[in-house]
Length: 138
Image (cartoon, rainbow, N blue to C red; front, top):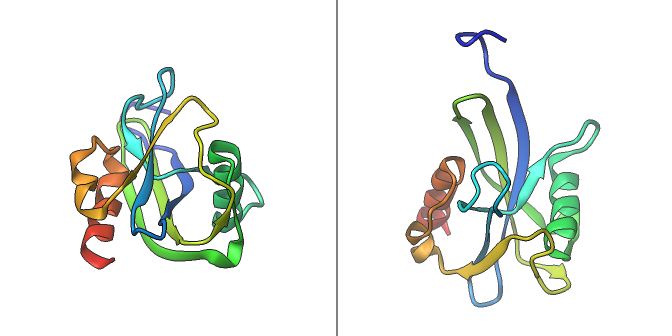
């Protein structure tokens, strides 16, 4: 692909887990990964043949050891964001019900944050607009 050519579009899905106290789980990308040190809503790339909901269930299981049911995922917002070498399209789901206790399984740090405090974290560029949606609409 030439420097001025089109960028690949990456489809990912993410989830904002909301606990009974109204806090939202965010995860800090570990060292060695792209955008290491930035915070994000957990999720990942949508695999071929997978729905965004299936992606979120799989990623939450792999990253945090929790089991949300697909019907507990509520579409909330999405972002379409250009990065230097790719473009990301990402729906964000809200989930208030899941089985298990969230714990970092892939070397990431996690935090439960009130919506008003999301702006105090260095979020990835794509996640910033989603955080603003959460602050404004929840």
